[in-house]
Length: 372
Image 1 (cartoon, rainbow, N blue to C red):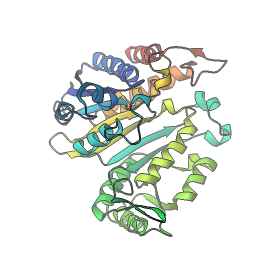
Image 2: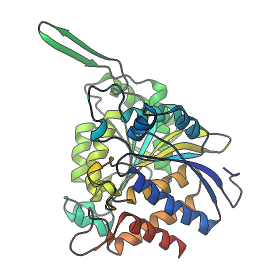
Image 3: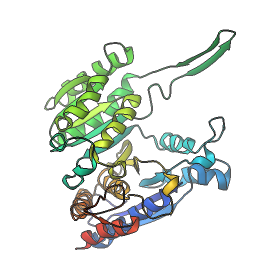
Image 4: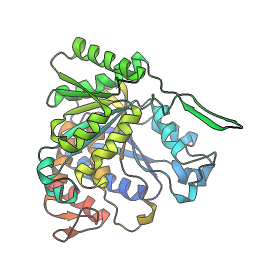
């Protein structure tokens, strides 16, 4: 990537289409990024690599060494989706999801950002009452590498049956670094941070609350901090979603709450995500992996009906967090807003009043708005 003071950015972006609808949505994101490059005279070099089921079929592993090499030497990564019935054997020793977990580890990604915004033109697609969705615009920051998903696991069998354990572990340093990411976001937004835990019963959550309180008090005193138990947060996401600005929480709670929050936008196909690593001091930006929150949707793959907006908005996050191109990121987000407001959309968001278009047509409409 070029020096931050330069007008033109040269960046290397690895594309990991993956499985199912992944190639379609990644292609849509590239189309929009090409429009950005053309309008602002940037230069994006793309490198394609294998991950997930496609990688298993070609190489016997979900994350080939060449994919890791390409990703670690790039400026950012765009991922489509992994998985599908072909590889869906719970007893299998090699699974597509291993590729996703492996690339997160290889790139040192620890903070997952999921922006949730209720587009006025999409409110009809949400199951919630219209009055609850007005002004919904928040970001969930989920810790990505710790907690119960990565703790020690055991399964014991005896004559009485089975006994399984999953150990939830967090350290001070793990909490500090993800909370700082959330605080930086909140400082650039409305200045409100909500930390979600289960401190009434879990020792890891008590640690989480203590560390979060200290980081905000000592390093971000201008922020307004509140703590919510995860069950209360789940209710408030439905009852008063517009009350949130930035939410920070641990791995499992974030996994669950972000899927709940997806219904606010009207379609899971609309929502982007960014998984970020530490700041690279030489470039002053973060390595990141950017992907839509939806899965591989194999039943609709290749039909041109998958919604590309989540991936296109993920590309906007890439420009903002990994390349430092805030103006261009905002331009993509505004273009998406205008296209959706025009009534164009894929089948998941278009009802009787809209104009149904294909995946590539919707991406092209966003690119055309950028060029204008």
